[in-house]
Length: 227
Image (tube, rainbow, N blue to C red; front, side):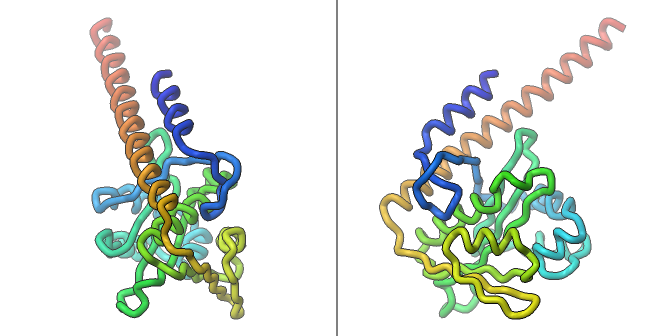
């Protein structure tokens, strides 16, 4: 129970805001954590769990297991930003990739890609990840966010339109563009707060997971002792 109370307390620290890209509105908070190279196994497990159709929509082609493993190994955590949402068992259930161009003249542009586990759909996690990525990109001086998606990827294009993006369709493919305003004290403060509370939430989940394992081991030991 103490872990649930702590989680509710963490949520109470954040100001009310909508699920859109930083617009004010109702409270809706999910801890979104910046991922690091040590999270590659969890990223790989998440992406490999996607169905063939989900892989097709996420990557624009029917990526097989080997192609996904190669994608994960090539993730550049030093250049790009990877964001993730974990459940209480510390399984990665949604992730976003904010990629920057290798060409210096396009450094002020960022490309967004997202994937959400099938059992987590309908909670607005993709939109929350987009809002998180937009805020980070804004604070990094990015002026244009864009999404390249298949035209049949209605969920992705809906996220873009809800954020105010301009969507241009070219047959089977679509491009969405969102112009970002300059960083503000408010946008920087929200990102710092999000990062610190998401990290604390992750550590609480980690401790809860370790505590449950300890209880399981103690229960098994007591059972063997009785036998």
